[in-house]
Length: 272
Image 1: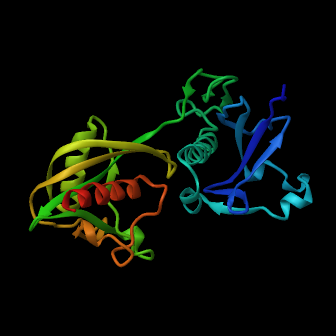
Image 2: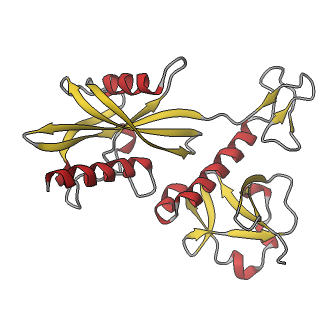
């Protein structure tokens, strides 16, 4: 019987130690106290993550350290499957949560780690703090014009350099359902009404600690009027124009890419 072991991801904010362009898992017998548990593989081996500053890379064999490079999460996800992407996202979120909750939010006392759960505990008032997830909606809006299916894509101010166009997204507010959030965000960002909302899927997204909930919606009414504080442009693109000569879209591995690809395949197949 093969002995179980531990695999350790090394994380530097949104970057991971990689070898050959893929995440490097350092195999170890003893888990550092600063590490967080991320997952357990099919064989029962545990996967942990640790912040770069909490591990001395010089203790690793020189043959390994000489090959390590730190690559950004956004750069890696196009080469990873859904499970690996989820593991890296969880690692980033847990390490950031631990860094941000070193003190009790009620009384300010330095916190201690719970021995079993992902939680910090205040030794003074005994308040438990758990990792929080922020729900966000992300929506592909479909419109048929002159018998041609179209999708709404927007160019965000934060994507000025990349010139990327993507689907609309936004945070769910307190007391708001996911569906209400879709209607509000679409109206606020582009001034349109939508209908026939359909759930698409979800993806954890570690910037900073989000759960992206995807929807397909149909254009109902209105003219595009963009929120200039958020967007530079928004327009409906013919689905069959979304090729190498079309607008730059989000990379593989993102739910935004999955939404756009689904629309391309589903609606192109209807018109063929």
